[in-house]
Length: 163
Image (tube, rainbow, N blue to C red):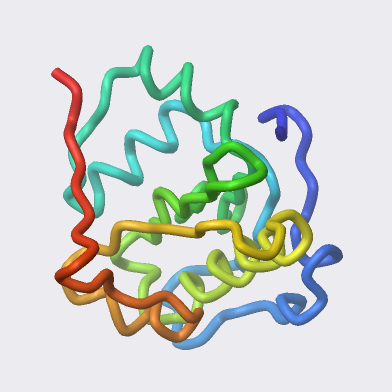
């Protein structure tokens, strides 16, 4: 578990992520991938920006510190993306909240977030562990690059949002 106050650059852990990305970016500065929890405010802002809507601040504050792995993509110290792995550390791992602000998409930053999560799974998941995710419509090809596949009609997934 990672504490929000402890900033650890992810790149030393994942050597192939060392390059600085500035591909046609209208922004100034360089992206940095940091192993930490997003703050409640950052998380809510990122969710709103991609149209996912807000969750209660209390729920977010309770949930974020319990992730198995969290990474935040920063540009000049501002969070422009995040990604998390949640689960039980043994049998089940779920990729959650792979978010990049729309103005920073299509620049390889989502791949950097995914590479960091996959590196965590390489170190932590045991053979036979289930690794799942729920993809946004149209994002399936992105996740298929990492070996994920759609569930078959014979094994449909289900979910419920608690009210």
